[in-house]
Length: 359
Image 1 (tube, rainbow, N blue to C red):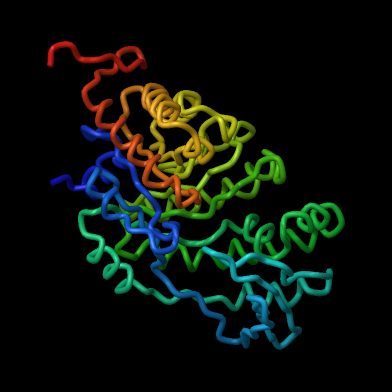
Image 2 (cartoon, rainbow, N blue to C red):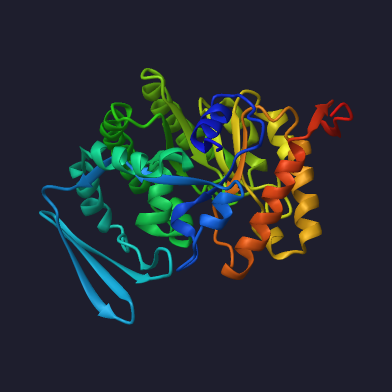
């Protein structure tokens, strides 16, 4: 019986298992979906779990249901009150209102950020790891990098763009507070039992611009990576968008692996380009979501092309990190798994997969 955990760990360490590992996020299975048949065919599970609990001892947080699946969160601080509104979606909460609505709100936001503490939650992580066993890999999930946190959670993407133009000083002050606070989180994660850690992601270079990624996101990657490397742990980022504008930033970073990387036709950097640009970095791709909807032959050809572009396959993994319509999951993943088994009987020469005629 295959040990998926060992195969994933071998690939993340830079090795090449006999079969390219193929994982599926356990938290995005469709409702009432049974993954067991696909696991029997060779699919592994990737479980992202926290190793800490975040709390704000001097902020009163109240959640109020407003009907129609809407939840309002109220943050009461000694210097002001902020509110946010979310709608409960299938797999997550969709923001309808973000906490910062005026320039005056930055003061309370900064208080909340500076008040945040991190309580180790290692036992829960270890329990999840024991529960999953050799069926896959549990990796530590953390939070967004400071600039991404401001963009996604405090302001929202549209308002973020206006605030950078109109209130840059306030944005930067909040960013500095987040960066300082995250140092406490780095220590808790570095001391945890997790060996592979995800920090942030969902970077959209067209919104942030490559210079801001270089000036504000890259230093956070490197600071966290340095802390983890001291303990023999590895850091990755969930870079699932168009990465063309930040290829050199990722190359210069001390990230150990790039996760959820999505090649064409969905995003604008191929597996071959990423492998050439990021030597030494492990590449854990998201199989392009649009291809899951295609015919079995197109899925097979796309899988073969991705594996061909992976070259020697060292430090290379595949998986599903985005929602797939329930009616397509079993059909598409089955084709991918069968194709990966077919690729196991091939040799790679000059970056091209070739059938081994000696077998």
